[in-house]
Length: 308
Image 1 (tube, rainbow, N blue to C red):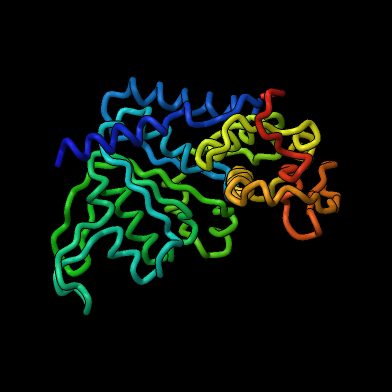
Image 2 (cartoon, one colour):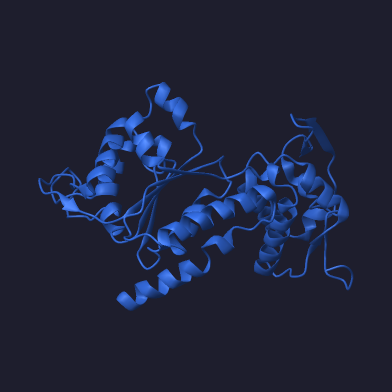
């Protein structure tokens, strides 16, 4: 079992770390530099009781990749990396999922269950969308951060855990504190170290680096290697504002690759919608940003001995 877990841990490490953060723009160089400085300080620290980190950024910017870089390139890399999306299940089930429960603790608790916090012992717990956590669970998370102890649902015994907590949010937590939706003490406890991930539109030529990376990956997956963008497609990629950030770019390219070349015989009209900052949002047929990537007849060139 330990050998199996080690195999999966090593495989995760290979596709994580700072090298997974693609980009050479000034905002990405600053982000990578910030991560490198933090990792260097942590390696020189006398112990592995590392401070919490709050990763902030819009949806789809790659906050999970930052969390993975901090773990797999850091002193806790040999331990587990456990991630949990606080908005993924109903709030009444989050406590049991995180802290575990004893047999008979509630109606469906037929067996004892170890929670994700205990599963992360010795490693890192990554809490995505932490702003979605309700106030009751926020109090329990604060206790975990301060005492490094948990109590399973239905238990009277407290258990010590050794873990590092990294959280991420696309919300304005300071504003939520002012509105009474997020605990002030927890906010400051989570944000001992804060890392901000830039929006895709602010990263300039990184858009093309990422687009080529995803196009190559999806082309390989769907049996269409050596694809490339036309000049017109690249201009459209750079002019689109990408409100869904890197995730939107990746998913749109995969949708087009999976659709097959029969989707490229027509080139729908492109509506340009002005946005602040001089950029335009491109909507083919006024519906979706497919034409922003130019993945029609004029956008992606099949390999034919030309430019590759």
